[in-house]
Image: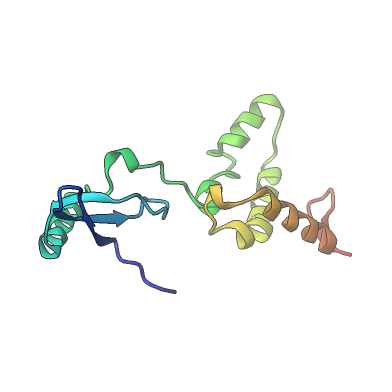
Length: 152
């Protein structure tokens, strides 16, 4: 895997004939952003400018800062926690929920979902991936009413 620099520089000749260096960087989600002027005419000064922006934590302009999208693993932390999980708290308000229901949900999450989707960002998980996983999962196993996994 290639290690990517935090920013890259390139020259742009302005209509006035002046040469100015621009930099490109990536947002928190790894998406490449459009170029931003350094206002500098030499590569050395442009590098100094970018390093100063990094020290000041301003390399990514405010307008390009986005919400950091969590991975499925990060999102699912505490999901099945009987005391803290928002989903379970909502469900408990509608009907009785047992601790074993939460325990089984956690087991299924850790056993079947996290190995496949755990390290993926939520916005990167597609309908087709979920559908493919579901078809293969149903082909290999089924979950009985008592929560135990059985193999066909």
